[in-house]
Image (tube, rainbow, N blue to C red; front, side, top):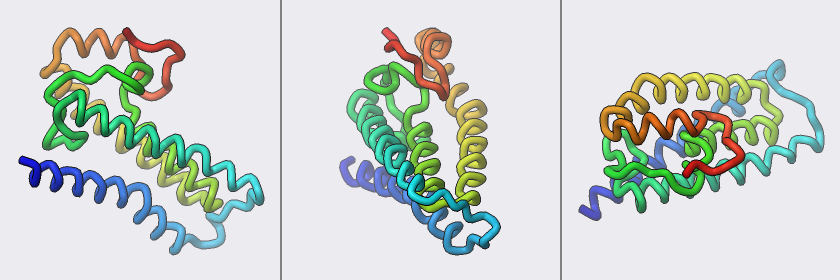
Length: 163
């Protein structure tokens, strides 16, 4: 049991590491001058979204594991419906965290190519959520999830917490 959870978490780290570090690194390395943004010292404004996004990813994954009794992986999903911490303000805090990290990297590395990659990942995440995750959660959690969807936005966090 513990070995399988460790393997699942290793896969999650590998996937997030690839999406947030390896692919951006390869894109920056191969980037031609046309895609380089010159924003000077403003590039350091990339650090806050990287840090906030990382916090969102880690905290949300922890919530899915502890409160949801599963993992963030689609093949080992939470068994319980999780509506705590960041999930009270936005339905997809982990994906939002991923996008914040990528936006921060775009600024920090002054890369228009990473901006395009971030937009591509937004489209990929959105399609995965709409076509797979939400229908699966509707089947699994029924009216509780329907009510949650009506009250909590998919991408832009709400100001007040869902109760």
